[in-house]
Length: 182
Image (cartoon, rainbow, N blue to C red):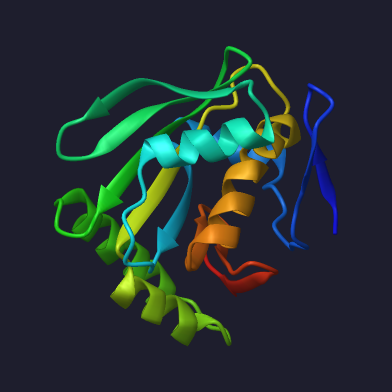
């Protein structure tokens, strides 16, 4: 099983994965519109930003979720050692934005063809929460930025049932890409 090496000498074990970053040219072109990664959890238990931050700090104390808001949805800024890596938001069933995102993601999945389509559509039907991250590359290399997000997806797959959706790529389960979209 591959490991994620933190900047503070701590290693986190990552599950095998087919998740590959988009080529830098594709991300730069879409960055102005936003590059998102979303974990749709089908787990009935309530996930919070505090829970996610606690898990990240167990991987590396340099992680933090700052500038939090918690009105109808929880949101904040995902940082690592003071650098901004993304805007994170939790959208829950019934909060308005959740339903809009599910509808949009469903349209993309319905247009796709592949063996994982049925599994993706079922996850969309039973999703309870969307953990959405707008990835912010700043002046970093694509791979460097995405590597800092790996512990989030690792922890979510280890502790919550669901699937990962990556803009411009498709859907992933814990081990591989199951449906290509975009």
